[in-house]
Image (cartoon, rainbow, N blue to C red; front, side, top):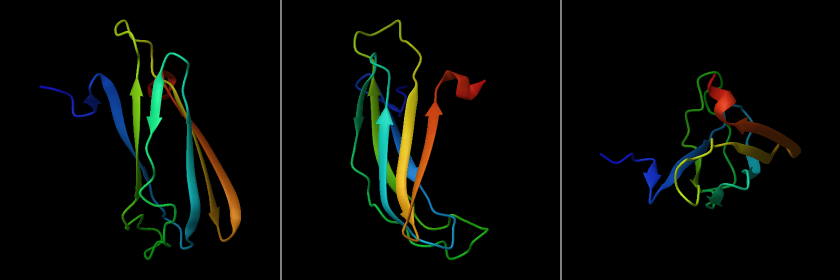
Length: 109
C-alpha cells in the first residue's frame, strides 16, 4: 500500500494553524527553509486570519488555517534526513508576533 503522505516520491504534509486565544490572529504568513538537498513547495494558506477562540481553555475549537508543504529529494536513495525550519509571523491585537520552529531528526529523539 502507498503511504498517503507520499505523492510522486515527495513527502506531502498539511500544516494547520489554530487559535486558542480570546483575541483574533491577522496577517498570518508562513516561511519555510530547507537544506539544499531538498526541494520544497509551499502552497498558499487557506486564509490569513483566525477569529478569537469562543471557548478559551478548551480550544482551538474552530477550523484551522491549512497550508500544503511538499518536500522532495532529487536523485533518489540513499535519502538524507529531513530538516525544516518554519517561521510564522502574524498580528495579535495589532502587535506583530514571530514564532520559529525547527523540525528534524533531533526533534524525535
